[in-house]
Length: 311
Ligand SMILES: CCCC(=O)SCCNC(=O)CCNC(=O)[C@H](O)C(C)(C)COP(=O)(O)OP(=O)(O)OC[C@H]1O[C@@H](n2cnc3c(N)ncnc32)[C@H](O)[C@@H]1OP(=O)(O)O
Image (cartoon, rainbow, N blue to C red):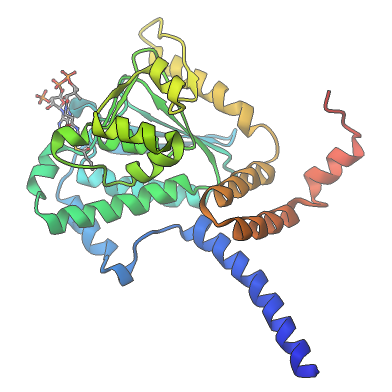
C-alpha cells in the first residue's frame, strides 16, 4: 500500500517535472543540435570568424522593445561569418533580458538582408562546412523564435535566401511598400538550410510553401498579406529619415501586443510557443504551469481589485 502511494507520488512529481523540463528545454536552451549530433559550436564559431565584415547591433530600450539591426549595407546586409557568430551572441543576451517584451529585427540602410555572404559561401562550399554552418544557424534562429519576446521582422527592401529564412524566425512580419521576401534557394541549387522551410510550412501551409520554394516566387506586400506570410503594412517612407519613420511605425505596430506587465507578455509568448511546438497534452501541461506563475500574481490581483470591464 505504502509502496503504491510512493509510486503514485513519484509518478505525479515526474509528470510535473517532465512538463517543466520540456518547457525549459523548448523555451530556454532551445538548441536543435548538440554534441550528440557531432556538432561542436566552438569549432564552428572559430571557422565562421574567418569571414569578417558587417555587424549585428542590438539596442535594448527601456520600454521593453529591443531593436536588432543587420548591418552590412555595402553587401545588401548579407550575413558574413562573424555576423552569424554575433547573431548568436545577441540572441543569448536577449534570452537573459528579464525586462524584455518585444523585438524588432530589421536591416540597415533601407534593405533587409540578402542572405549568406556569397564570398563566405564560396569559401565553405564543401558539404561538411555547409552542414556545420547550417546547424549553427538553425540553432541560433530556433533560439531566436523561442525567445520569450514577441518578435517582428520589419521588411524594407529585399529579404533574399537566408534573409527570407530569418524573417520566418520572427513571430510576425511587417512590410514596407518596397518590401520583397524571396526564397531564392532554388536558383542557387539549394533548399533553405537555416530552418526556413520547416517554419514557412507552419506559417503559410505546405501548398503555399511549395509554391514559394519551388517557384522562388517574389512575395511583395499584397501577395504576402494574401497568403499570411505578412502580418502588416507600413506606410511608404516620405523623407531621408525614412528608416526612423519605419522603425517608429514598427514599434507602434508591435506595441499593441506588448502593452502591459512583462511577466504577462512573456507568458503569452510561452503558451503560444508551446501550443505551436509541443504535442497537445504537453502543451496543456505547459499552459497550466505558466498559468500558475500568473494566477494570484500582482497583475492578476490588481486587475481583480480594479473591477475592470472589457467593453
Ligand atoms: C542557406 C542560405 C542561403 C543563401 O542565403 S545564399 C545567398 C542568397 N542571396 C543571393 O544570392 C543574393 C545575391 N544578390 C543579389 O541578387 C543582388 O545583389 C541584390 C541583393 C538583389 C541587390 O541587387 P542590386 O540592388 O542591383 O545591388 P548589387 O547587386 O549591385 O549589390 C550591391 C553590392 O552588394 C553585394 N551583395 C549583394 N548580395 C550579396 C551577398 N548575398 N553576398 C555578398 N555580396 C552581396 C553585391 O555583390 C554588390 O557588391 P559590389 O558593389 O559589386 O562590390
